Amino acid sequence: MANRLKEKYLNEVVPALTEQFNYSSVMAVPKVDKIVLNMGVGEAVSNAKSLEKAAEELALISGQKPLIT
Image (cartoon, rainbow, N blue to C red; front, side, top):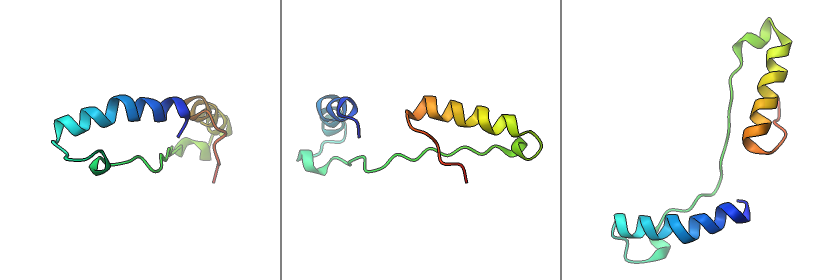
């Protein structure tokens, strides 16, 4: 997790979840281990440009270069 996201999670989300679900300990709050983004591009079979455009959009969302399989 990015530092900014981790700080927001620890400072805002964890206390809110602790209060909302009446957790007795901060350690009882679920943790975010992994975030996975997936995109299906069915029209890429007939149009290769759509695959490139989808990869660009996914890169903007995630901040990382997508792996095309």
